[in-house]
Image 1 (spheres, rainbow, N blue to C red):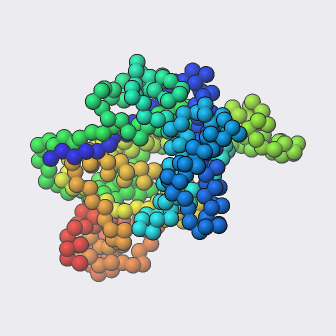
Image 2 (cartoon, rainbow, N blue to C red):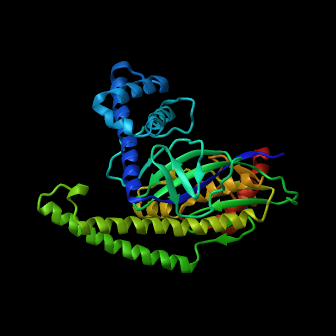
Length: 395
Ligand SMILES: [Zn+2]
């Protein structure tokens, strides 16, 4: 039986200077609408103790757009800005809705300060033409990579999004696909533990970490980043001493250039890591097990007071590994099981099942007080995940 799934693509855009101007205007309008209706909803809640729903909001939006004071909104694609209203609505309900167990934070104002913008480009009749993507009211914008996104009449595109990461403009889009049922002999199970020290530990005892070559490249870029940060803070200090407000318009050309270099460095770091994780998760999926069992991680909850630990936690992209394993499993029809949030994968002995509640998360080796089993903590955890279903039935 084939199942439907969505495959996401992200590709760099190559807009002309004129188009770049337009892209910034569109993103600015989307941000304006988001902030406008966010403060509106907050005020409305203060008085009536409830939020307006999507339909009431889009009615208000149409009124706003017809208001001569905001006539500039008419030059922006209607769908691009209206989508901002919808997104805000979804963000608020995700936070307010009591039925959802995975509550999100209340949406906040989008400022010009963080250099990441995005907007919804609409769903045109013709999506692509001559390696260009069709953005409503802007027209065809060239893609940097040729033949990366599959193009065809039968392909169903969804969720298009245009974003700016501080350096370049990107298009992200999803395509509806169907899984292929391949006749492969799937007999094995794999328990997978993810962590900061060992990115991936398999229940077979294999451990994977960033290769040394890559780590030295990362270190090199981080050293460069430190230097750039020092240089920019000097510029900031100068501005402060001369009582200049720190706005983009007041920044010197040199400072703006340094900030662009910093953003580029961060992007390169993420790309290096993501690239490796992609290769790693693909190689694991290619082993084609019947089932993959992982733990449920909430990176946000794992945050501690130790800033250095937090930094390592975020930069190691642990959450990304699980996300990739999950969707790649779905593509290949491998059953993906997330162990219960409270399953003590790292505190339990994988031989006798005794739980060591005092086991510290900073211990490298696990020792069992009952049967004196001794093993690397991650391997022990991976083996527990391997036996996860059995323990659920027994317990
Ligand atoms: Zn034991």
